[in-house]
Image (cartoon, rainbow, N blue to C red):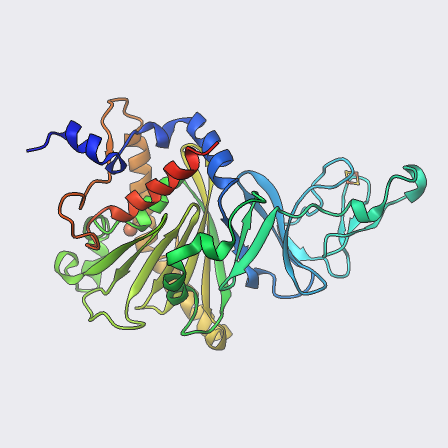
Length: 380
Ligand code: FES
Ligand SMILES: [Fe+2]
């Protein structure tokens, strides 16, 4: 029989030091080595449907704007003036097609495409100052996948489709309504007093469901322990869990929850035909901000349908809903427990020895995410 020390030595990916959830120095490294090197979720294309539409974003602490240019293209630019650095977009969202972005400090004007189009008293600088060299600075890379806007601060990051690798085919099911594009229905922004990784862990954690969400299942007259079955998958650094909630596994009859490394979770709830995406921004080592978008297939996104969807979502998987609130409260208890300076490792070791790798109660997807974490954190 193995001892825990032997188990840790053989499979260190199943055992985590608490400090990665509590040490501010670790978060600083995560920002530099993970958030600024990998691909991260910026937003959804349909937040900015019309030319000139924009939304302010903060990713890895960086002030950004997601904007649809007058040319129809969605761009991600830094929200900082080329004169003396002020924010140029002050409102959280708006449309700048006619007004441009006008810097509030001295009035530099930038078009929706990011070009510097006006400098008050333009002749003050001299010949070296050329408007075309002082546009808003674009993020090193941005790209879209099924309507999701991704960006990378890293000019050398691999192409997005390669980064998503084996998760691609699984994302389609959860971000396309039977092949149809999704559009934004509603959005939510909220904080959870926990380290950002806890929500990723939680999304891929089937083991907690009968316990944390037991009362929810009871309300629907389902026994959680007996009534759910599912399949967990590790997809490179990403992961997914499919739930059938006691119904036969079949196309469009399966709930799929995914975590895309590092800051994204993707959800399809078959029971309510609900699509949602969450973006996680670390605020500090024990606090995260979550932005959640509820989406629907374009052809079914009538106003009446959307109101019904938003109401159903709010009371179930929304942040104040039965599932959402139970998880948030639980993660805050985890973060408080993490503070205990007792040296005991955090376990993600279920399934290491049994070999039934796709069992929904196992923790292999957390280990996949942890492998991604190690990969990026160990790079120079
Ligand atoms: S800081 Fe923007 S115009 Fe001066
Ligand atoms: Fe949960």
